[in-house]
Length: 231
Image (tube, rainbow, N blue to C red; front, side, top):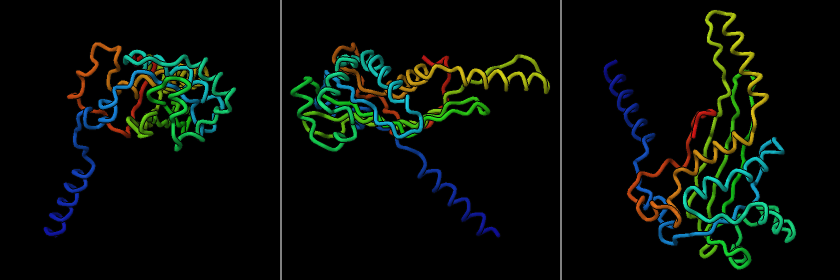
């Protein structure tokens, strides 16, 4: 019996140590970004693998702000979208694993951002919007991935009714369900993008450019619950 307990204890320690991620500095995790020092970013139309047909537009229209806030020059999304459509380059998946030199020549882009929306579901009962999105930054010089993150984000739309008891709980559930149905999905996309891209190394227009390499990088895959209060 004692041997069994000891073995179980050792197994638990080993499993917990395997699950622990060793902290890595940004300069190590994203060494391609620090080596190339990119300035100009081209936003490719998101690759939508979810069941929400409008998710593509939500994400594309909200990606430029967190990138600009991080110190990068973002080629105007609507302008680049029109050019990509005219050049039959609207389907980003066709270019995900191909050379990107043409995008450097045409747009002057240093890096290209691909986003893959794997899931976008809502649950009125749980009062949440569930999103699984992947961000891939690729160099137009080397075609290498210089930054990537994938997040499972649960956006909470829960409303507190303020009262107790069964009636209060029922009111809260009803209010949360209504709030979920009325949620502006552009806001959900904006918050998801802001949270994920806050880990991006500072661009040339940021006062922190070249000074954040010692900071600890976020996990490349993460899960988080957010709400409208996140900034």
